[in-house]
Image (cartoon, rainbow, N blue to C red; front, top):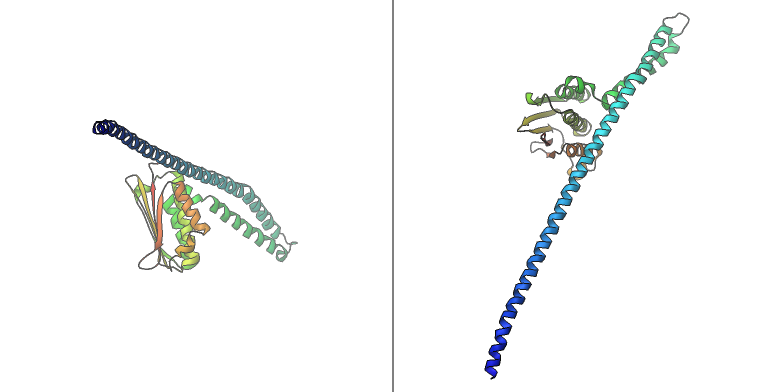
Amino acid sequence: METAQEVDFLTILVPLAGIILIITVGVILMYLQFQRSIFRQELANEELKSLHQKQLLQRTIEVQEQERKRIAMDLHDELGAILSISRMQLLQLESQDEISKEDIGPVRDLIENTLASTRRISHELMPLQLEKLGLENALLSLLTKAKESGEIESNIAISESCDELPWMVELGLYRIFSELINNTIKHADATTIEISILLEDGQLFCRYSDNGKGINLDTSVTGLGMQSVENRIDALQGSWEYGDRSSGGFFARIRIPLNK
């Protein structure tokens, strides 16, 4: 009798254990699927958040550039015109015998300096050379100024396929290279600068380098100049890397996808 009861018990227990095992495995699989679903959702949310941040950054820079252009036009058209008229009036006064040129001279010099500063600030806010002559000539102008300020020789190579880039891309590249050139002049003690821009398979490959004393990677990220460069590259949905060259000096490699 006991043997029969044990057999009946095992007959019930084994299928029940199998059912419990199946339910347990099913719950584990459902939990893992649920975890994967949550992970995918979080990943999608992070991608949307990143995309939104990039779009917000791009829009912010576009608004900043529009405001720069407006201020530059106001400086050039209004304040510049007023200073030019004042200079002409002073020149007319100087031509009169009863007016002392020694008294007017300092005022005229002040107006001349203010007019020159106004033009410089206006051009920095909205580079007319970039708008009228294109990216290569605008960069050549920056490199010419670098040579005048520190006897820095330069070499620039831009492929012909870059002649008709979107305006915001040209402006972004101009701002980026302007900041890098400015850093070289101020901090690198360099004697050469090299720039290259290549358009290939819908992507821009840009390189900047100098033969200066390199960069401190521990502090460079905190600098406003490098942050500005990084923000503009992010706004163009690009990527970059920078550091010290093995032969000495600084390098930056930038990739910008135009199809985005």
